[in-house]
Image (cartoon, rainbow, N blue to C red):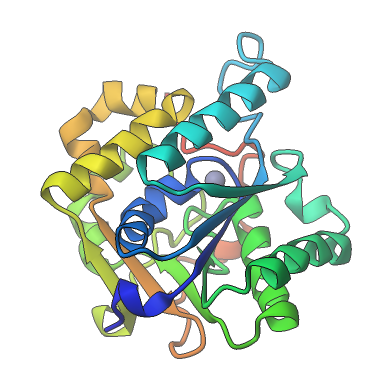
Length: 263
Ligand SMILES: [Zn+2]
């Protein structure tokens, strides 16, 4: 099992503001507390992450989400953020080599010891997540092949414990998700409690355009507990878990970058 302190400089590569908080707030805070450098890359502003685009047009929501991201990272003492500037929901339709080159230049500049991102499943099944995962793997190969590559994942116990929440929130967009990664394949687990879980809740609350509805539906205590365990696969050392369910990859996914309520 890895220790956060062994991960050195960490570069997180994500699609939308809030991905980094849900999946790595605890990891980033622990690394920063230990004096490590943490840099977050976000591909989009998540400007389509709303069910009310008339009230929250993309320009307005994108500006708000950039501010929310800054506030969330500040709570974790993460001071370095890079933005790739792609439109929300568009990553698979961008010029792939150009997008990878831009990310690879950041990887070259940061020289991370560890890159953390989504697995090829995209964790929630969102196409932007899947695309940015592929970009991160290719950019690492080009610019920092020695860097460790971690994929955020979910486990059998997570799936079982939170089934009642997953029934109420349409977070997982494809059949077979969330993944049931065997515990033996998990390379790093952070089990957050007390002040660490509180701090993650602050980071999640900062993404208010995305989490306020969730908080109203399930409450702060449940949100805090739901994402209190962060689990990661070592991309080079473990077979990727398969999604369950027929034709899981073919499921249609919405084009917005958010973790939405069912309704
Ligand atoms: Zn996302």
